[in-house]
Length: 247
Image (cartoon, rainbow, N blue to C red):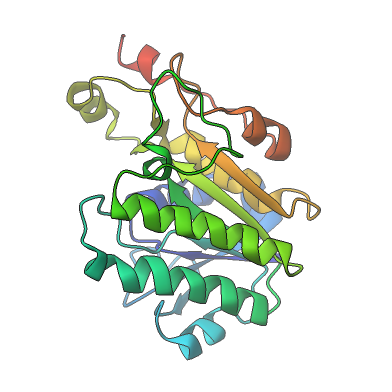
C-alpha cells in the first residue's frame, strides 16, 4: 500500500485532514497515512508517527524512508512573521523536504502554498496556476519560493511536485467565525473541500509532474481559477462560503 507522510500535522489543516482520513474508509484503502511529529500527537494511537525536524537532514532521511508521497504543511504560518522567523521553516525547511524526498526516491511532494503568494492581484482578476506570484508579504514570498522549488525539482528529476495555494481555511467548527469576521469570502476553503483536494492530489496519476492548484471552495465569487484543480486531479468542491454565510 502507498505510504503518505504528513508533515505539519498539528496545525488546523493537518488536523482536519487526519480527521477526514480516519472517517473515510475508501481513503484508507488507497494509502496509509503516517504523521510526522516534533514531539507527540493526539492521533498517535490511531496512526503511525515519525519524528522529524525541518532543519535536521538525518531526521528527515529517517522519516522519509519507504515513503511514497510527502505532504508538507510544516511552516511558520503567520503572514506577519519576520524574515528571521521564516527563514528556517519556510525557506531552508522547504528546500530540505524537496531535496531529501528526491534523495529517498519519494514519488511526489505536495507543498502547502498559500493565497498570500498571489495577494497582489486585484479581486476582480481570476488568478490561474500559471500566473506569476505577486506576494505582498515576506510570508507570501516564502510560499512563492516553495512554488518555485516545485517547478525546479519536477523539471530536473522524476519527482512529482504539486503546490496547493490554500485560501482562508475553515475547519468544521470554525465556519461561523469566518462568516462573522470576514467582509468577503473569495478565498474561503472548507475543511471537507481542502481535505478532498489533498486526497485527490495524493492519488493523482503519476504522470502529473507539476501543478499549482487553487485551494478554495466553490464560492460564487472567487478570484482563483479552479479549472486546473478540476481537470488535473478531479477536484469537486462541495461548499460555497457565500451561501453558507447567507451572502
